[in-house]
Length: 203
Ligand code: MD3
Ligand code: FE
Image (cartoon, rainbow, N blue to C red; front, side, top):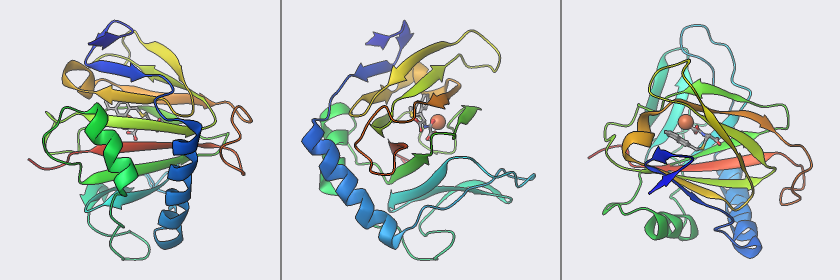
């Protein structure tokens, strides 16, 4: 199980039908009505992210001047995150081989100008569990490198309905989103891209 020659990276092109994609978008509209998108910022500097975020699940990932962490409630409203809907949990069950469900579903919203710089996801206590990524809306260039910053990278276009699984060796690689292709999908009325990442945080 390797994709782009990267062990632990699996690519499920167009895994979600148009109908399922629309269903998930409807569920996300309910999510943001209670847990609005917020603008995270960099620890220490407070530089705002261009990507806006919210979460579903018993834990959600947040970033502010204090640092990166998982917490049970929304940083602005103080309310708990809503549960991960069954239709999203099903994707975890279909694609991951993991025996327990994810606590967190991070929802990233990219306007056409948004980017995500190269980073490693290591705030999860349980780094042995896979991450499942679901792309919706406009397509984007995803870049994945090695375990150190500045090494060789590979890139691929992620389109609406595509899913990725990151496990094993791929789980701790540097990765990011270089650009979003405005108008490449009409799934979202207002355009842009949504990425969901399902994450097991604790053992
Ligand atoms: C490779 N999201 O939320 S998803 C993130 O499209 C994140 O929004 C990107 O990076 C996005 O942290 C990429 C694919 C992905 C997710 C997690 C990974 C790739 C990964 C963890 C390790 C290596
Ligand atoms: Fe990431």
